[in-house]
Amino acid sequence: MAREIYYTGVDIGTSKVCSIVARVGSEGELKILGTGLVASQGMQKGRIENIGEVQTAVKASLEEAQRYIGRGVITGVYAGVSGVHISCQNTKEVLDNPGDMDDVTSNRIDQLMQASFPPLDAGREVLHIIPIGYDVDGLSGVRNPVGLHAKQVEVEAHVIMGDAVALKNTVRAVQGAKVSVHSLVLQSLASAEATLTGDEREMGAVLVDIGGGTTDLTIYRQGNPWYSAVIPVGGDQLTRDLSVAMRTPWYTAEEMKVKWGNAMPELVRADEEVVVPSYQGQPRRVVKRRDISEPLQARMIELLKLVLLKVRQSGLRQFPTGGLVITGGCAEMAGIKELALKTLGGPVRIAYPSGIAGLPSQLRKPIFSTAVGLLLWGIKHQGEKRPYRIGEKTSWSSLFQWGKASAGEGQARKVSAK
Ligand SMILES: Nc1ncnc2c1ncn2[C@@H]1O[C@H](COP(=O)(O)OP(=O)(O)OP(=O)(O)O)[C@@H](O)[C@H]1O
Ligand SMILES: [Mg+2]
Image 1 (cartoon, rainbow, N blue to C red):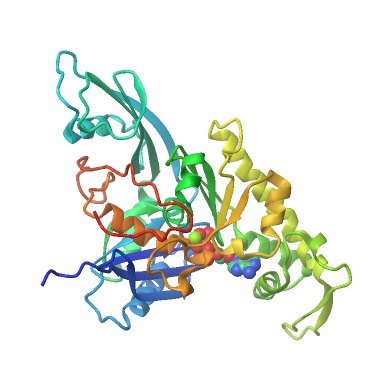
Image 2 (image 1 turned 90 degrees about the vertical axis):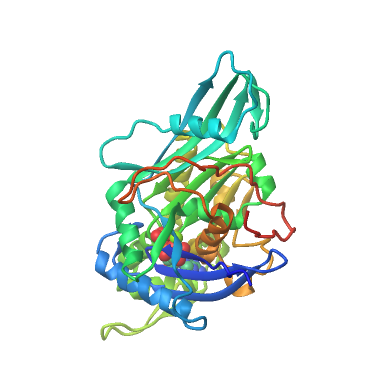
């Protein structure tokens, strides 16, 4: 009997660490074997600040995921990365072969991909090189040039880079649990994998994963990722603002935000009051729900404006027609869709992992978009070499991360490996 292949995604977030182990069933459906969700520690705005604490959290999360399947099942994982050190660049390279009228082969495309590698500043590493379009003998918009008869091929690639130390620390955080890393994956790409529909990718859409420490953003255009960035603001900032405004400790403000916060205070009845629990010997207090929501709205508007700024910085003159797709823990906040509609215009969609055959309902929540997406990424790209070095020589072969747009909405995607 063929050996079962297991896939593991580990989302090391600022608020939580989530590990999911799965295999692919005979019908191409996802079979979830274990999940491990623990509170994060040692992370600041998506970046590792205390490696020992992060290792402890990752280990606890992986152990929880292995509880029902036994140790030894998880050998390698797909781990998410984020942080403001992430940058991107779209590069164009030409493979010129005058006189050679051969069909385009994947080897020649690999040569192109290698050339797409932009000169790196010291201390930077390439995380992803994703081909986003080919121009074959002047014919643009070719999706896959392999097999075509051509004299010249030009490739445009979306290259994502990060700080070498930050990337290496993520690998070390996982290795601390005696598990290796198959591949590091940008968190917003993973979240997009789990949430964006094929139509949204084609029409163009802005995916934002608003977590605790960061807002991870990837813009899709004509089916492919086109711009990626990380904004160092997330739900923790909202909690901090509320804690100052209400003069409460952080944990009380966090509870108030989740229970009563509304990104659109005007949607809350003007006379609606709630009781703030006592803390540190302070008596219980009655406050207006609108007063809780106002500081949250102010920060959320600022965050949405930062998203808009990133869209402008990407070079787009107008918002993509697929609109804004919001996921991550903050997507659960009441009123966020209405506020985004008011601030940016439509369309706006709150997204969670969906359209994935076999995915249990417990994982269809915005906080699981990255972890589920890491699994899907692993299944789709298994066996590919990674473009970055982590204690090894850079390898350039088989870097295809191309031409695999998701199925449309409502259609359960099969997740079969290549
Ligand atoms: N119902 C809710 N209303 C408001 N905020 C919420 C709600 N549920 C969760 N959140 C917020 O979502 C955030 C956590 O989201 P998530 O789990 O996606 O973060 P993370 O992935 O750990 O962090 P990051 O990706 O930023 O490193 C917290 O700030 C939390 O308060
Ligand atoms: Mg996250």
